[in-house]
Length: 302
Length: 302
Image 1 (spheres, rainbow over the protein chains, first blue to last red):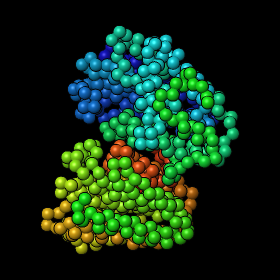
Image 2 (cartoon, each protein chain N blue to C red):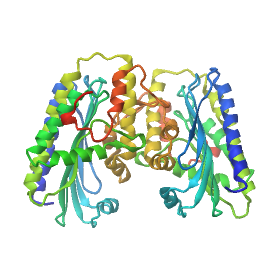
Image 3 (cartoon, helix red, strand yellow):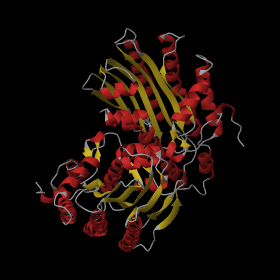
Image 4 (tube, rainbow over the protein chains, first blue to last red):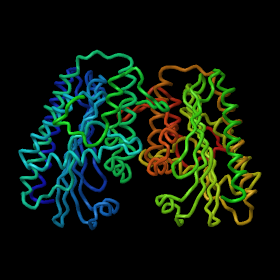
């Protein structure tokens, strides 16, 4: 492992700690995260933390740092030789009980080999059961502010990348309102520390972003048709994660820890043939906004 | 299209008709199948039929016959040139309301190219929420009887193929009690008509097999913990279909009709982190029996 790797790993661990603490406070139920420590046969392991609370119906905040000889499938997919590697990061998916509170996802990660390859990756994206344009604009402005402090090109690039990545091809719809997504971040002009600083900024943006989404929506009343629509949107979330998400598929195919990977799945979901949300105008508007290329920062409702 | 193809297509259509009629009677709600006719841009189309009944919570019985120039992805995956092709068949998945009635799946299909390639494929498999050994033995004996009338080797081969195919690798568990699965059936010693006769026998076995499973279980009382376990097993069904089922993945990746493909998904499913069915001995026994290689025909409960 490189000289930097210890401090990067420690930073991810402290990020997990801080986020879990903040989420327990936000949840307010007094239920703590359940923690499962696990080890990987080839080297390393992780800390899986799951919250079943009042506000948060099912939340996972996972840290892992795995190392050892690179499995063949991983080497192949990355176009690298089977040298020793380190992969570490934090992954989060939160499913709130209220259909008015969006599903949120964040992943920040670092990868290196003992041949000197290294890069960061990550992203934050939001999947509202109901899209509210003002909240979507605020979320994207928050990400743009974080990005702009590091590179004026990051937001536009990584926003487009998220639109293309969090896309349910067989439905021709995006998973939600996107966010940012980046991979193999290893800039020629920036040092590893500068790249790490950007990843730190993304990680640190998670809690304020989610707090804003929660406070804007937690007191909205929930009707039966809101729950029905939530179950449908959660089904689409399952479809994306199991059919298209490369990280999920890769983890399941390379003997990753199944329960940690699939913490991203919602507590429940429904599928009804050719479902249409008749009589639910906000659901119909949401469906019409699940597309790539919306300039949320400058969005004008119409 | 070959001279045989018209009669094969017609046979699949009449199989769909007969099975739908029998299932409406078995369901008893008086609700008919909803039918959606669809066409495919490149040629052909299908009849998707969906039942939302009293006994059957969500059932799909689909017929399709698509033809035209073979899409590149299909040609590649089959190791064929991009000639004209015909693919036709019937696909069924039934999710009953009662957790005591197993999920059942059948697919029978025929494929040909205008270069003279042709084969049949298909299978029936059963996914009980609760495995009852006597019923599993009866189901497999029924399939063995059907197979043995055509070839003494079919049952053993196709039962093993089903064990390997209907396998949730990331859980190291089978989807259910298996059944039979076969593909590229084009025997040197048998004529096309003889191969078709076997596929007809499989298709015709579907209704009596399902009727037996229904009559053995429909009057069993349903408790809350039965519904809870059903939701978990339905989640595993989703995992298999979206992560591992080649037919589903292929259909979604090659612009198939999404709503017809995903009729296989259960009406609802649940995912809870590291779930264990404590206090439900039949669920625990079921979990222990979700493995390959069980000789169900000769199974001795122990």
